[in-house]
Length: 224
Image (tube, rainbow, N blue to C red; front, side, top):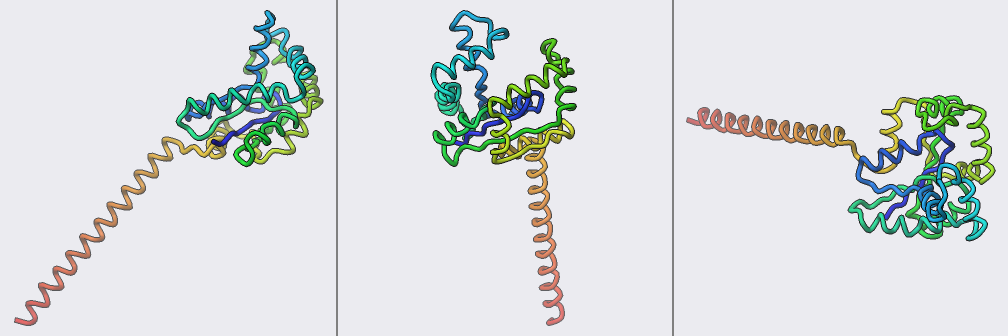
């Protein structure tokens, strides 16, 4: 089983990468869901208490608490899927990274998704999930909190980097490459190409057969 983790600042494209994986039939485990579930267990609104509960979990269970709680979800997702990969969305700290590397060894790959601040701010504004998405100052503060948690160091330790500054189509193609997924269109093109090659080979063989037949006929006539 290959486990592919993604790391990136807000608006970099982690969610879209997860969408690409899901569309390809690869299960996605979102680390933030662990925190949201804990919020609900404590009777709290995840939208208001997400950050506080995340910190509480780390204080109560250790800095790798969220990663530790995510491990059984990854194994469960893998067991229920016929694909040989699972995508894990939302690594932040190097402690979480080390927990995953310890659990999965060489089968774990960390993918950093990068995009400049202005582009990320533009995307978040267009997404508009809440008022903070259109507030650049709030985004800067959020970036700082993420980096303080160790996200910057985690980005630097990635095995693969994806530059998400181009078109959406280009980004999706790059994500599929990293996931080892072949586009249906590409697969179709390959099939058509192979079929065309086979047709040409058969045509060439038939031409060769006809040439040999004609040569034999001519040889017989010369000898008569």
